[in-house]
Picture 1 (tube, rainbow, N blue to C red):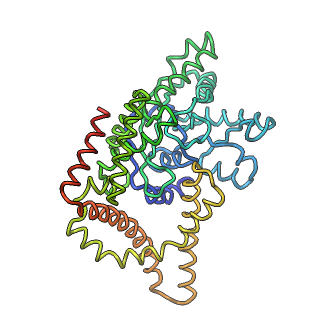
Picture 2 (picture 1 turned 180 degrees about the horizontal axis):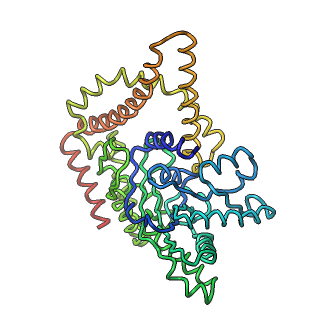
Picture 3 (picture 1 turned 45 degrees about the vertical axis):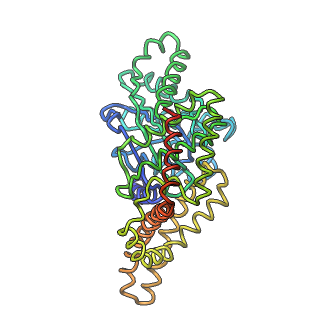
Length: 426
């Protein structure tokens, strides 16, 4: 019940936090089969929340068990929102490992009912654009389920979770579903050698998942690749509406960039870095951004008029909506210093504080006898969303306006430098 109750609120919160959520190739999920969604794990729990909100079928997923062990309240919440705890010795000690038998039984039951089960197959949360070694637990759950229910036709769907900057408000999430793996093809191998079957299936999960991830092979290349990922992102103006889309254009373009740079030699990367640094240095000297250079048309008369007319309602929306959001972010920074947990924690605390903030405003108006107060409460979130849209448009308008002030010769030379950078990747 709690799952269905909080789902619409979580969807609103995620739609506000992210500028755009791309969920592509959903048709790859077999709806009439027991399915495991095998995803990478770049953030604390944002990716399970996105899928739970945007997939039609109720989603069950495995979550870390140390929180489950230490809190009776969290045990109830785990059950209510369809989370199943998994216990690792390094988190909860050796004594809790036996509780995993119950976890596996719940997983088998979910698969038997043909309900999707999500497993974060890397095991640990790492905020980086590269896949980590895949744990063998997913394969073991598959073969454990087949031992109990031989007729199950289990499919594993790799789910690549990618973010432009997951810890930044109004960034972009890109979720890509890959080609399903039919686990029955490993039955003969499993009968002869269970360990070999587990290893082979785990290896295939990793290979299929890597195809759906923006992968930077070497950590020392992060800064260089991010420069070029920004160039690709700035070429695509996705707009504000709708919040979600099934388009793969941004993901494909960013994956191609990362894959191409991975192939370069050390010397080629050094030359590319020099050229990129030079381009961005020129932008900084002129006090403009790459987005502004690409979208100088944003400084149009229509957007200028919108900037003037929308200023007062946007500021009102900010003032009325800021307190719970600011406090939620403040708490997140204090209790979740790790970048992997910060965004998820901020979303949760800001959402709950916003609800209590609204209840407090309603009770204040009710006790003071303000009948029009209810109407005001309905307007507050609308003004808040208008502020988000307004500041996003104004940011683009300002970037375009500054780029428009350049003389034509400087603009032409900057665009020429940019095109040369792109050609170096071809």
